[in-house]
Image (tube, rainbow, N blue to C red; front, side, top):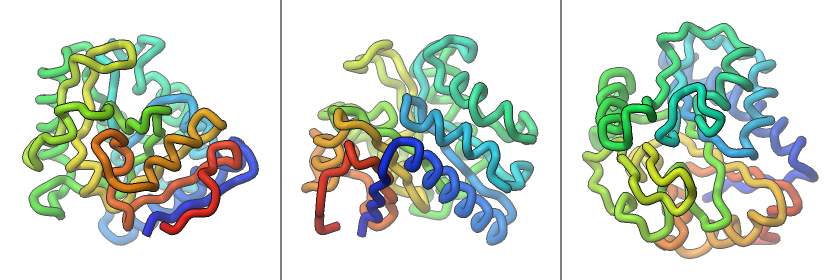
Length: 240
């Protein structure tokens, strides 16, 4: 079942999410000696990352990954890595070797190939040979996309051997991106999806409806999905 939490406002969403992320990282580290966390960009997670930096987490035992990245350099204003660096990473003590950024400047295909190799090397395969993240933080677009997996895109039907994919035709600029595959999202121990604002309400409602390639977020594994929204983005009462 999807775990849906509705909060009064965006700040409360961020606080709830930061606390939940911290608890899951601590649990994973206690169980296996390492915790794998994947981050997304966008406006909604930004405040969560700022608050997460203040949570009591032993960051030396955490490996940080990214769900997607635009094909830009790490200093570019549109870089998801830069967003994380300016919010979470600058506020925590974590060895640089434990932060695995997507090299967007290499282009979609080479960047995706190199990231897949990193995933193979550093993340244990515990689900059908797929690397398993302990937690992947996601936003959702008004069209229902997650990471850089867009409605009706061929990337949604990539086989389970595909860990990371190059995108050359994103409907949102810039067109070239790198994204983890749907298979990696579905293999994660937990995905956490954050949504705030009335502009996301329809997408959240569609995500909780019947699975469809027209709403990529609806293809996530419901029993491993936590959704935290504010009142404005809430779909109202649902059966989940």
